[in-house]
Amino acid sequence: MVTLDVQALKASVSLREVAERYTSIKGKPGNGPCPMCGGVDRFFLHSDREHWSCRKCYDKPGDVLDLIQAVEGCDFPTACARLGQDLESFKRTTTAAGARQKLERPRPWKEDPHWIEDAAAFVARSQAHIEKDKTAQDYLLNRGLSMETIRAYGIGSTGEKGHCIVIPWFLACGTLTAIKYRLLKPFTPRDKEKPIRFFSYEGSDPILFGAHLAGRSDTLVLVEGEMNAMSLYQCMEGTADVLSTGSEANRSMIPTVAQQYKHKLLWYDSAEKALKNSAGIESAILMRSPCDMDANTLLQNMGEKELKRLIDLKLGRVEAPSLPFHGEYVGSAYEQRVNDAYDVAADQNDQARKKALQAFDLECRKGPAFALTYIAQHGDPLA
Image (cartoon, rainbow, N blue to C red; front, side, top):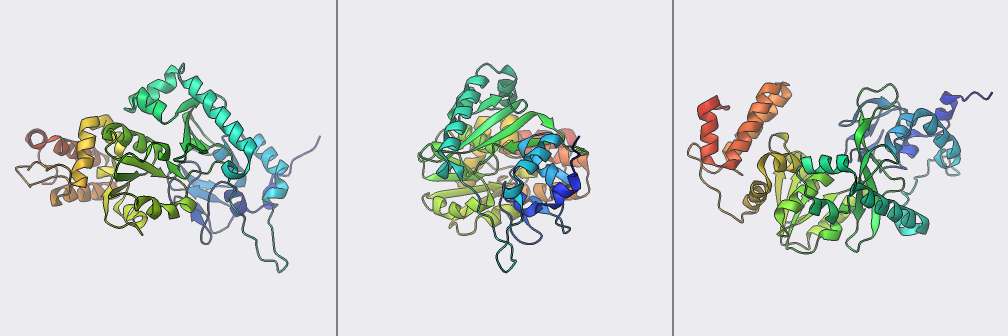
């Protein structure tokens, strides 16, 4: 019986080089986009260079085998076998002087006809599968998405890697570059408490999500995440092109894409992230998620009509109504006060106040009467 020396297996490779198989890493010890949840800079390597974490989806230190399990959705023995089989491709590569050689990120959608054929065939199977997969349909419908939107984006489902939603990424020309999975039954890696909800098809290169549906408007809305992009596409009804960005390595193209549009709105989770991603984009309107509520959350709470109105207000397409107690809400100092109060509650981990401010923010967006009714019933949350 052969005993696998796990420690020797892990020591034989560089965690950074394995991580660079799945995402782009910059700096030292290194950080970059998370290959599981897609967060811009949430994934980072620890100072010991043997462990990694994600600030959103994997907050405990993981080793190289945990990384393979998390990204590929496999169990521990499979991860060991995967690392052992690909040992040569994962080993440290050095120059004659001993300096580490940087690995180039593979782009199989450009270079490998077998990947293109296999990935397209998998997407086609998943699209056929979701048509009879009521659980997957209900999951998306309950998030506020219509079957028309689901089919427009080519969304599918599969049971091949656990029960997953399958999300393909296409270029404007229709070329498939990436496939992401969203687990309906999250996978919890060995010795971890927090489940993994997302991972990618091997060889995926996410560039711009929704590009195949763009080109119909002079207005661009750039957001985080596929669900948010699909939510806004659905409510905007062709009056704006909606795109979501992929890996850090591909974000350099955003200014080039944005310059094709007369109007640009960048909606990110935080004002800081919106400002960072607006670099090189002229006359961009920046927007943060109000009280940590993203586009899909607002779609579920406000509906398509009110979400479209929110975007139109930010773009200056419609005139905002006046609230009797503090003028316009969207883009106003009062809206900023609500968001600032929410940030304070978040810092203090005051869950009850966070929920109250989210509820009040939604009422303000519905109109003056709704906001005043809330104040009459619950009191002014800013008082």
